[in-house]
Length: 447
Ligand SMILES: NC(=O)c1ccc[n+]([C@@H]2O[C@H](COP(=O)([O-])OP(=O)(O)OC[C@H]3O[C@@H](n4cnc5c(N)ncnc54)[C@H](O)[C@@H]3O)[C@@H](O)[C@H]2O)c1
Image (cartoon, rainbow, N blue to C red):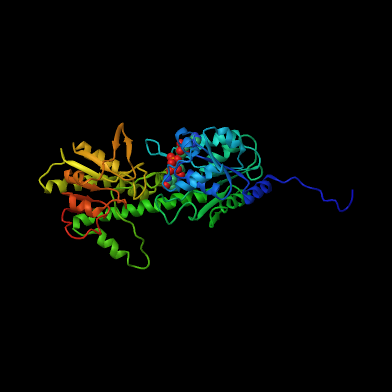
């Protein structure tokens, strides 16, 4: 053999995969194309990756393939463009994931009826992915879960076929931090935290995310990344509960909590603003701290802050119900038979998500008192809850005048609060949405 002959070594899976990721020729699969998965799929497709969105919901799959958007944070035009160019296709056929070099798992992580973590979706998708796992694949879990899930649950499922993690395939946890409705921080410009099962996993995982996100912080393990996510959400849950408790106290002391918060927020250090409200909602804040509490119990550890925060936040819809009852009573009315118009059922401003929304609880509590209830929400035209179909009524002057009480539960920007205050007889405002309404606000009862 000539001394100068170079012997070509076959590329190991890590090198092969890293090359494809950096060249953006890697095929990307996103399992679960909901609030987290669809924005991610669109961002990856926009930079040139060929993306397959796998979901068992055939309606969502059809919508994507027709270029129709169903997630508020996704730009309609951008979705249509990546679908039209063929860079994003959706499917209900899991077999298509076998073509993917990278698979990102974004399935739900709800609670069971007794508030234990329900990771059955992660397990189910993990098994589907395991059935087609082949050397050179990167699997990233994004679903929020308790510390340990990636290594204790997903890794054994994926390794069962005999492939070695860190050599044949790569596994990371990188939580999604998307804040629905937040126009400033989106999937694209919110920094990411990532933990790999091995150093090679972290290396290729970070390379993948850096194709679309400038700042990717690699932490020492998936467990640290998992803990970071539940810590972030617990931080919010606890602080919201603290300000909600202060609001209930201020109501007793006859002090305006909003004035207190505005004043406290002028301190340039040592304080962070949280606003009170009718309770917490969505897929994260009411649920995720329970994931941590459940894991803590395995270690004989009782996370008292989480339980206390949960207790206070769960009480808020009852406090709001009592505010409404008192406000009507002061006008000589009983809640029984009163017409109540709810403004906003989404769990927060300018989004269409009503999952776990405290508005639903407030409506239930008022229905128990025989109130006649309607709602208006510019982002939620209709919804089903406990077997009943609800439809948003137009926010007409007639509707406002006919209501015995208008209750603002979500402070959507599209609503003209000055008109609401002018036309309605009585307004219970749980979000301080009427703060800028000038003159004639004596009919407003503020949380
Ligand atoms: N929504 C948020 O603001 C947010 C923010 C950060 C993190 N998260 C976390 O991200 C995860 C996903 O949340 P989401 O809000 O996107 O949920 P989602 O319900 O909007 O979307 C999940 C999707 O997964 C699909 N799915 C469920 N099981 C499946 C299966 N076996 N195979 C294929 N598809 C399946 C569902 O049909 C759905 O379309 C959760 O763990 C959540 O806690 C959510």
